[in-house]
Amino acid sequence: MPKIKTRRAAAKRFKIKKSGKIKRAKAYKSHILNNESKRPKRKRNLRKSTYADDANKKAIKRMLAK
Image (tube, rainbow, N blue to C red; front, side, top):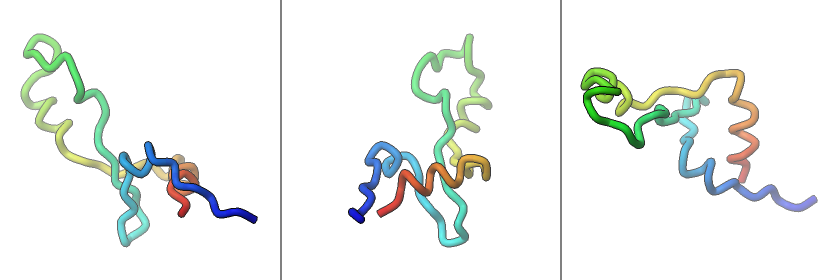
């Protein structure tokens, strides 16, 4: 059986930590950042990374299979 290739788009977006959790960046940070639509506090919180949900863990790990 051939090796499974890593999906490069997923490799750029997710990192698997030693604990098994999957680290990801938050969405909605790319554009429309003016003060009328997104407040400074919201933009500041979007900078922080977070962890992927357990419901998506299996699919992400399959995409990152090496």
